Length: 288
Image 1: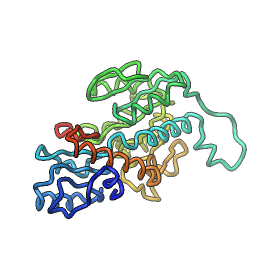
Image 2 (image 1 turned 60 degrees about the horizontal axis):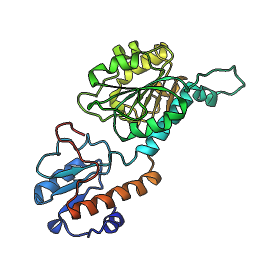
Image 3 (image 1 turned 180 degrees about the horizontal axis):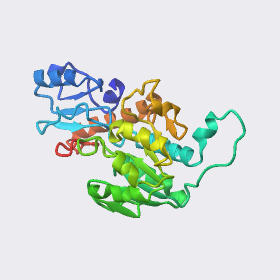
Image 4 (image 1 turned 60 degrees about the vertical axis):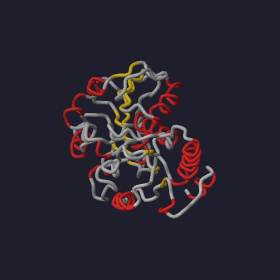
C-alpha cells in the first residue's frame, strides 16, 4: 500500500498532516473510528475490501469514502464460474471418490442462470459466461441493461428469478436487506437439480436451512467460497455433504490482491490530487 501511494504521486506523512488515509486493517473498525475522531480533518478514506459491512456504521457524508469494489471482480468471477462447472459436472463427488464410478453431470451450456447482484463481479461473470450461451437473469438494486444479461429485475423479484435457474450465483453486497435472503422458503422454490454458488458473503444464506436443503435433496448442490460462520468449524455438517463444495474464501488470494489493490490505490491517489471523481465510491444511503 505504501508503494502504491507513492506510485500514485502521494506522500506518506503523519496523520496530523494527512489529507486522506488508506486503511490497512480491514477487521479493526474501532481503530478507524478512533482515528477519524482524533483526526476530523481527513477528507477521504480508502478501504481495502469490496465488502464494507464491518465499517458501515462509520461511513458518513462528512468525507469521501471508497472501497475495493470492482478491484477483485476478475479473480472472483473466475472462481464462481469454476465452482458452477464443478458442481454441475459432479467434480466434487468425483474428487472424493476412491473407485471408478458411473457417469454424472449436466451442461452449463444453454443453462438458465440467475445472478443476484449487479456489480463488478457480475459484469465480469457475464463476460465469462458468453461462450456458454446461457440465458442469464440479473437481479440488482438499480435496474439497467447489462451486456450479456437477457433480463434485469428489481430486488423484490429475486425469488421469481431463482425459481427456474439451473445455477444461482450470489455476488452482491451484504446489507440488512440481503442478510438471510436465501432461507428455507427460497430454497424450496428452486429446482431440485439447481446449484447455488456463493462468492459474496456467508450471511446471505441461512446455513442451517442450506444444510437441510442439501441433505433432503431440495436443491442439487451448493458451492461456497464464503460461509456462516467463517471459518467453517471442522465438525460442521457442510463438510461431509457430497453435494457441497467449499473453498476457504479464496476468490481473491493475497497474491492476486496485491497488484489489483495497488493499482486502485494509485489510481485514486492521482484522482484525489487532481480533484477527479474517485473509483469505487461507497454509497452512504445504500450501505455499500
